[in-house]
Length: 289
Image (cartoon, rainbow, N blue to C red; front, top):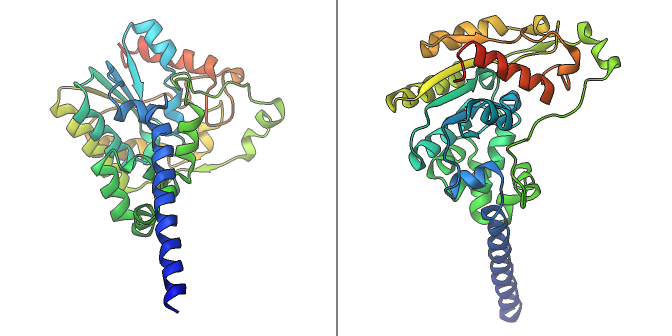
């Protein structure tokens, strides 16, 4: 019996050491990645314009903004990024870098929470007390999973994205296709109900307030939707009003600003062509420098 117990103990020790060693190897891949959050947490993300949003925030097409303004950009946006995670990322950014001149935010990140994506940020929780605390408070079982197993922290989409950008920057990450005629013809059949979360609106308020105390020019926008699709987005005007009330700032609404179907990859996202047109509109309106 004692011999069997000894074998079990030895097995658990080997398992634990193997887990920690493998976790260390994977962490080194994250550290060396050109992915946006890797760059932010390792000191190479200083910018004049900070960009923020969910997947629609990727419409802030960095190469074109930099070409037209001569300013350096950094984009914290990610597919489905909710505003509570966004707030932590902004706070971490402002702690590590000089304040940018401007911050541009797509407010549809206040649409809904995203616990699955939040769990994926375990990959970077070792770099951020704020991320670690947020995950602990909101997803305690997931947090404990990351404490028990180092490998558990890398079993997610965020790590896979970091790995895919191991040797190339993601500054040009944007949908690059034209919506199919078949899908475009179905626009009237597609509805999208936006949710309005007071909790996420409070996070937006706190982001804006902290940025403004640092002298940052904060601009709020709604990025373009496919023609005729914006009218199918329930609560869009209500979300705009709620964001303005929460922050005291004006939301510039570009949801219906682009009329060319070929400027979109799907109903929710402009492609590169559309994103360039969007950037031009923001520059003409003074939203971007």
